[in-house]
Length: 261
Image (cartoon, rainbow, N blue to C red; front, side, top):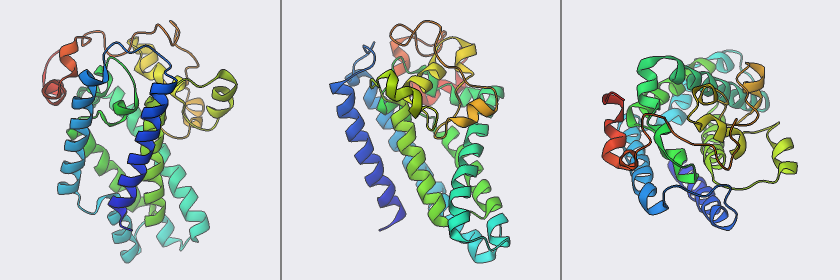
């Protein structure tokens, strides 16, 4: 089975399951309907996918195979066994994505791209794909460089991509987890309540909880925020200067980085 098909099937299965879960047990009352938000969120996801396939037809998995053929990268140079290289590669890639996320908040020119993701007035499974195409290009370049430098096995890269996409959908989903489950779960992975804090309009909360998959990075590097100051049910989401419903349209998403707030 090809890498794109594996990723597509995994994405579609997780998306459908979480979308149904949101209908059955939502965490928050939405401010805008799916009809208002999903066309733009899914539209920009489709554009991102098409652009990345055109620019990087072999994607990060192809970079791993290319590096392996030449013996490039840490794990290839060490001839590390698969049982060691695969889990360490997944951990290292997740840490690099965490660092990249912090950089997108810290550097003004990267924040102009990333703030498109933060203009959604609600959070649900569709928000996981709401990233500007230019941000996705930068992210893919970082990922390819990391894969080559690590000498990550192709299987590790594929596993990481599937886990990252599934985790992003899960952490953005508008689903209610009981506290007895959320507490131990967020010790291991990022939960929806943990990540929702990151989408608060308050900048000190926005600049917290950067992890995508493994939640420990935020605790290790001092960026963890346990709860939002206004509570999950009432906390306003998005950016203070872009809370208009006009920001929900696809054209506004694409032009967002080039407009002054």
